[in-house]
Image 1: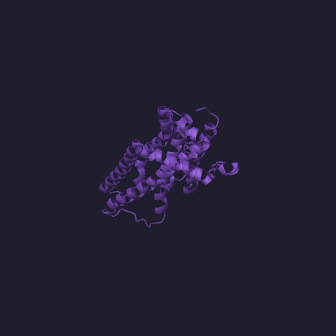
Image 2: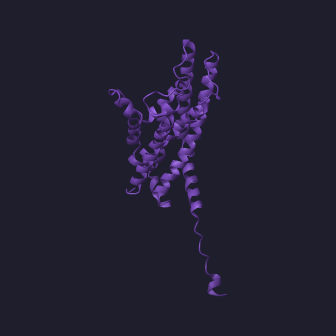
Image 3: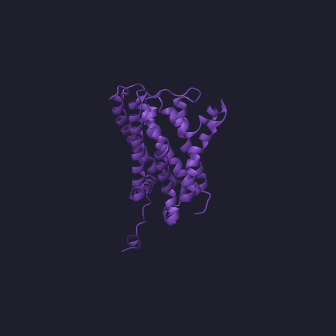
Length: 267
């Protein structure tokens, strides 16, 4: 037997697609195996659906039609559900730093931006599907209440489907902003404290005298989100189409900053 016959075969290097799939599956497993993820999603669901139903009941019992029959349904999206999905994004990164597991993750996948991309894909897919489901449930329950008082809207009404889809996309955007903050700050307490500041603090600018309040406010995440879920967008702000670009820009820019920092830092 020759030496060539007994030489061990060289191990095959997995393709880029296989490696990307493995990293994504690993990050998805982390997200769904953490019990806090289910609690956070439950809190977001209860507060969003409960808040929307309460607003619908209050509107139906008041005897007056809401100023915007669709945007009023999603008033509850501006507080607890937003923070809940944002914290879910934060924990996707900071939990590994707090336990030290991040060293194992980066040892297995030295490409730090690949880890960031996989985490963003896992959290993004989860929150996008969850957000859309939550948006449609809130819509149908609220409109069922309002329809009993002849104030409801049909899903076939012009602009309704796009607005409901946009409401679900908002939760996805905020989850990615939270994930990026987790990657930037790397400490759970600090990132969780920074999250409401990033989301809510820009709203203080609305107290500026006109026209500065609208000129600056149109680029804030929550005001832009309000525009894209409104059947009657506020005059003086960006149109729903441009507001959608603003909402999409927040997670995009935050991810770019996180990608820049994560590649330059030590663990």
